Image 1 (cartoon, rainbow, N blue to C red):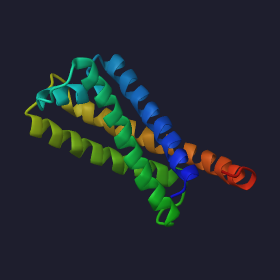
Image 2: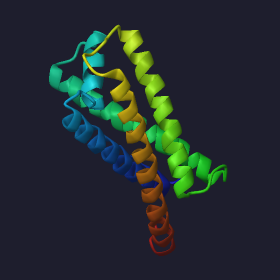
Image 3: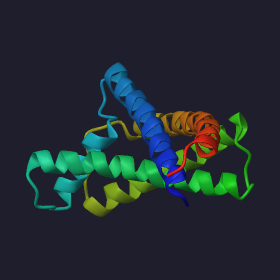
Length: 160
């Protein structure tokens, strides 16, 4: 992987994770529930007895959230460059849906591991999490597609 693709994947993951997070924050406000992944990750870090100041835990939670987004985008990229899936609306939806299932299973495991049962509507949280990941997949695919065009042009005219 060259530096151009690495930066492309960083940009794609920031865009997709930000869109997903914005959706989760909007759903949280609309339904007056705690559906904010970074906030729940902060609680999770506290429950796992990670000794850090509160502000550092919150920062670490955000970094973890975006790092996980990067890992999903990296997986998408590998599926696309190996021609396992096309860069299309249908594959974007499918990848988002599968990512949502993985996200739901991940949160179930984390809640179980930490013995943390936040006062949230779990069915509502998992449903919005699935929708948030579908948004993630759609934004990741659109941003990847657009940035691929930019990347082709950059590689053709810029040398490092």
